[in-house]
Amino acid sequence: MFEQLGLIGCGLMGGSFALALKRARLVKRVVGYSKSPSTTARARQLGVIDAEASSALLAVSGADLVLLAVPVAATETTLKTIRHLITPQMLIMDVGSTKRDVVDAARRTLKIQVGQFVPCHPVTGREVSGVDYADADLYTNKQLVITPIDRTQPAKIEKADALWRAIGSNVIQMSPEQHDTAFAAISHLPHMIAFALMNSIAAQPEGNTFLSLAGPGFRDFSRIAAGDPQMWRDVLMANREEMGHQLQHFQDALAALTKEIAEGNTSELERLINRASVARARWSTAAGKPAAG
Amino acid sequence: MFEQLGLIGCGLMGGSFALALKRARLVKRVVGYSKSPSTTARARQLGVIDAEASSALLAVSGADLVLLAVPVAATETTLKTIRHLITPQMLIMDVGSTKRDVVDAARRTLKIQVGQFVPCHPVTGREVSGVDYADADLYTNKQLVITPIDRTQPAKIEKADALWRAIGSNVIQMSPEQHDTAFAAISHLPHMIAFALMNSIAAQPEGNTFLSLAGPGFRDFSRIAAGDPQMWRDVLMANREEMGHQLQHFQDALAALTKEIAEGNTSELERLINRASVARARWSTAAGKPAAG
Image (cartoon, rainbow over all chains, first blue to last red; front, side):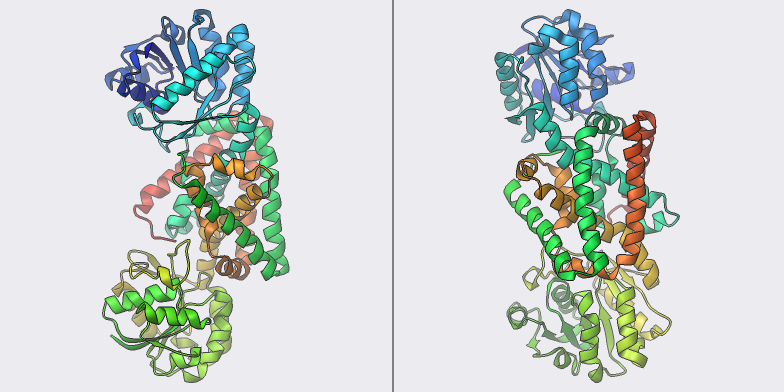
């Protein structure tokens, strides 16, 4: 049980976390801050937070739990702003979709206090953003990746682990590097591809006619293209290196298909398609009910 | 009301068409043929067809309605086999996902009888194939594209139009060329991309670890990668020209994103992502309940 959650960023992710903690009776009081005062006011109005803070620093003051739920690019500035009020018993977490940039920012800004910062990535989200969509179930049965560094205090990792499990998340641990490589492949690159496909169609004179014919196959394939532009801008920038590697793998696989089509090697083409089809079918079987994100 | 449907290809598409016609009491008798005798037998066993034909020609004999539900690459051979038993009142249709190759095959093989052939593309499907998945509702509330040529008989188009509407399809008409361009953009290229992404991940040593972290975003994006390899092999081959153009548009859009990421133009990157996000959001609003496919 925590006395006070200092919530920095009262959007979909932060707001949902506050609601989940409140429902599970894991926190007595939530003090929230958002860059835009209207968001903070709305969060208060919706009962997502109990009190509005006029700055990130004031949101942290007196808290024993702090959650950063800001665009990853804002992590360093935010940590700089709050570091003076960090107390030894304070557990600090984030919810960023990239982890190497976040732990680097934490190392630079928190210095010896970096041990109290537990980097987290909840594998969940929506194609909508904002506190109005905050949902106490956003993290239920979803994967939660903790990416500790050498200096992260084991006691703080345990605390974070227990907390996320208590609100229904399935907690797994890996290094920030492993995390960023894996998510470049299964999330960041697919988003970049979906953005590119939507833009390539929208840029064509007949684009709207094309889209009027699209069905569920296209609907599902392109769903992630509706993601929050500011968030994805930061994710693509932060993980550009790993994404570059994954993009190369993808281009190679695409070139292999293109080659067989151009050369009319139908049997080889079928073999390549079959490999993809089997891999996808095997995954959905293995995944069962996959975590959101 | 038709006397007899000659069904050539008793798989998911053909079987579902037969079931839909039977349920709507639009046909008295269904005679089916499949390349594999076990499929034909199974279709009979499931009540999808009433009688098994030992050849495509025999399936057509005495029919006033014929549906070709075979891989598009098999269209020409199939039409050659059946043309000798085509009578003037016979309505012949296909369900191929590409149309230019199909109408070319029909022109070559049917000669003057080509007017009785109404090229159709039901915008629907499943990530499973085979008669066991045949479903009387596969075409309900789905788009059905008719792509007539100059020589297609207006009376036969009307008949086909009324038939598909009677089983719940939303019928639209366009030229085979318009069709193949549009579907290259919204269906064929997305499938090719999904195949490539699955292969690029599966080919990496840590591929399975990556996949174990994937959630609904990836699940939806990659769903179409599980499509039937033989069918998609034929579609990608048949429409390779249009797909090549669409692939170029896609590569340009992907390069634009890559450039802004590499140069760190975050505002321009956000603008590009926002364009995609808005286009996708606008589409889903416009699409309402989009047709399957």
